[in-house]
Length: 244
Image (cartoon, rainbow, N blue to C red; front, side, top):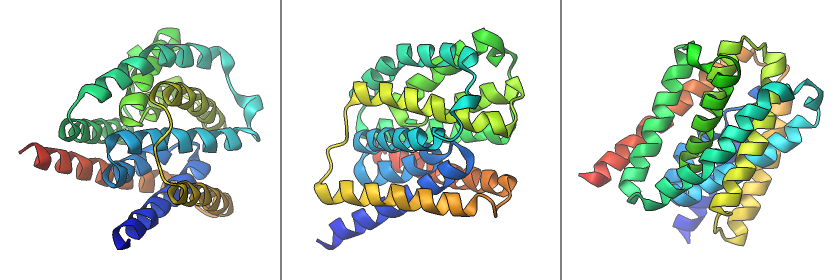
């Protein structure tokens, strides 16, 4: 019983933190939550729970900014992601758990490294760049729950301001996570775990909305990257340890 309570507390804390960050920046839930959820629930369940939670948070967040969605730019992104989501799910389902853990760790760590470096890649510009980013994001989202970084890199290359970055990130998050859940299914959790996760999402949303006017965006982004990098390295280390 103690271990079950500990798991539920860790699950709730992870979702609260991820949801708060998602509300502050439009993205970040998966980068922060996936490493912890994977360690608590296992790779398969952790990824699909991250897909479900990130999608729900994006739906609520987009209600205030849907008019700033750039449909012309986003359609190639989401169509390409729809094409690669099944491939990511297929690969993840056939890898041994230690290899999948290590793979999730590598993808998270590499994605954070690219974002931290402010990488600009010419191949991620224009319609071709949108298709490339969407294809990468769909595969990464269904395989490892972290489909946001390719979108971030595309938006950085496009020079989008934060005012436009956030609602478009939420739109992308809705679509890619709906695709991922449709392919991977919903997590097999107990009623108590679902209740904890739902309550944590609400609490995280309230915290994020309360903190948004008070915390400089630059600080939030740095915190996201530090936490995500720590989580990615932790999962990678666990996967490598299990493989040895």
